[in-house]
Length: 310
Image 1 (tube, rainbow, N blue to C red):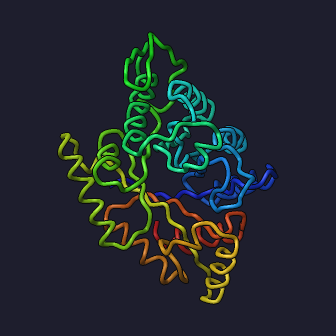
Image 2: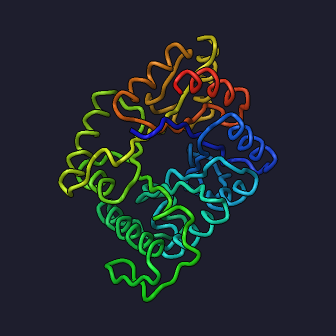
């Protein structure tokens, strides 16, 4: 099993770079493994949110403001950027960051954004096939001296992507989701890391079994695929503080208003919840806090939760 690691989801709805730099540098000093961003344009993470920073640009800036913490996306939408161009962008960022890129990739789902920005929104099966072909293009450009590909959705002709990513053969690829017929099959075929959320344990165990079956069907050892969890986490020293955080988060919107898939309670409750998933093969947790700007909360989780688990 891979070593236990903890990432942190960053805020993307503010334009004060000094604040974002302070959060990133605090997370780095506290020992977080990585910083994570979503790939949306507006009306995310809640309806009505109009101010959203584009993740690739923000990662590039944060790479220069940090030195060791890794930078990742949950997840880049295949249809928003041509895969060949994205391969070049990723290779460049990986080189300039000293090999710190975590490459999260997905098929996209936010239909309003697709329509608003003029992207076609085909059926989900088509989007997943496009994602898989996009990953084929990306990998070829990252590893081959010259890449040629003639697919249904993308074409390359003797394409050159230099410099190559610093990480070999390429940055770790994360795919998130739980669709059992198509998505988890794509995870088995293409990903280094599978990302899910803290669903009830029976559901998580079922998804894991399905994923392992897909791995075996293509001759892959399921143990070569790491499990990660996007983990909305509400914790504090006192239960009243936990309730206050949750109520404030629900008032702002986001996932807290419509999902019960989060880890909640004082550390003596939260730590065993994390251990439940560790026992089921999860080695990578990406923490989403109710207030991702709260430096005190970032430190509290690092010391009172992560410190107990490492």
